[in-house]
Length: 82
Image (cartoon, rainbow, N blue to C red):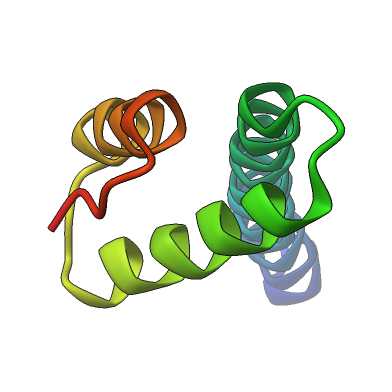
């Protein structure tokens, strides 16, 4: 193989990995957003509060599973999960 073929293969692999990572992150955000909408059950004030809490939990470095549990607690109790 010549150097141009190797370059094309390397670029294609790097772009495929980057695209897969982007889609994976995007789907995770959609899942998180869907969870929040489901927990809020058409209550815009609660939805906004859950979105803000999710952003705070992300900033604190909390893992997804723990964030989801805290959001469920916040939605059911109406108390902050921190």
